[in-house]
Image 1 (cartoon, protein in one colour):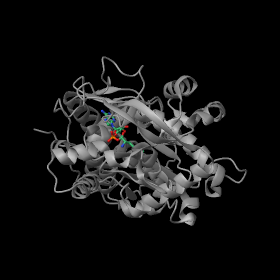
Image 2 (tube, rainbow, N blue to C red):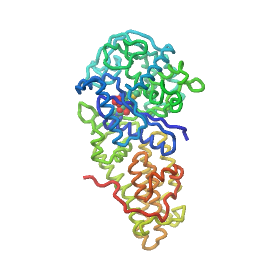
Image 3 (tube, rainbow, N blue to C red):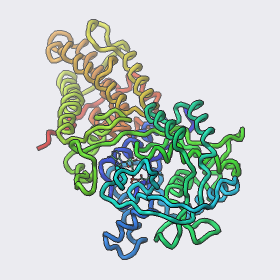
Image 4 (cartoon, protein in one colour):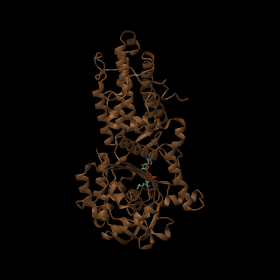
Length: 534
Ligand code: ME8
């Protein structure tokens, strides 16, 4: 078992409120954090807001905010509140205008400077505020950034500080070779490797202060402000005490997993490790015992959601507010849909029709009905109680069914755990619903094969075995699904007559052991888990 799990989302710009895209990354990080907490692994889940950016300044002006700080405070509060309302279990929320972050950035800058990797040079390039990034001539199409065709590129001509990123090209390529898991999925690793090989250059990491109305001053040179990406990436360290609390930093750093969208892999998978490699040369806190730099363990880049086939964009006005969607569907169902619908790492479409299909079919028919039937029949034939079942191997007497027994359930757990370790929540869900061993589909099939409603007339002992199997399977599904649908999981446990908090306290090993549901315990009247929506 790993000794800790530190997972992060990107820190989001506050030029807009959360939409379904940022919700996707945040829900995935939340599910992975919950899965590790359930395993008993000390977990830290960080999210936050990226505030020292020109696009926030423009948004504040457009919103006619009283002043920039008021705008930033209001927007950061909206992001925090949205995640809280949706039940996102973040442990910390970092804002890049916080004092702890400023201290971290200062220490980091000084370390890179000490490693002789910062120099001054004059510069003339096109800057895209949409990407908060300089564009090379190869990246500009018809005088515009292809990602932000409606925004004018700005010609920036000034003297800036540069980071000697190119000096880390070989070290980065070696890292990708020796640690192929550093960037996932493999397709993104190939993209990053190609970028570093062909196009990784020194970065301008500051801008003239007089031209900006935001940004952290360069230590020792008030006339320059630190480039937003150089500042923003450091958030992953400032939140765990870099520059303020060495003990805390040693406890949590390196991050176990940075979850990001595919749009920001160059920064996370190339610039960020290069920055750490440089700073680590002069800051022992950033070194492993053998002197190597303490790099994040893994970066997973997921794909992008479109909405009914179109890019999510403010100008198209198609961004879905997760709070609005949560008025139509229970948020657990939305979490399920987001994480199940597209293979994690690939692009996909967010369609309300598909959401409704999955709600009715996967959740309502396959999971909800199973629980409902198992409880109703047990109550009917066994006096409102969990039937007794002496037999450990629930297949005895019922050979020939497709149910794989408690061993099958162990295998299912192993498969689910492996997918969670690989951050493939989509595959974990796919296996729970459709896998070969004790999946929800096979549990439903087992009902059809054994027909407990008929069997009860001839053989009550066997009926008890079948129903106990179904109830106990539902208990196990609840814990498997808890990271993805925490409220539904608790509701299932309660409907099985148990106290979810008490059960949880027993620890994952006990939770996974077949037979946790006590025969003879009371079964309350079942409620519909996923009511039909009008
Ligand atoms: O890039 N589908 O912030 P940002 C899936 N501040 N995910 C999406 C998405 C979509 N359509 N749209 C956005 C920044 N995302 C920087 C990050 S980190 C040190 C600094 C998610 O507000 C996805 O995770 O533009 C993407 O990487 C992120 O939002 C971009 O958020």
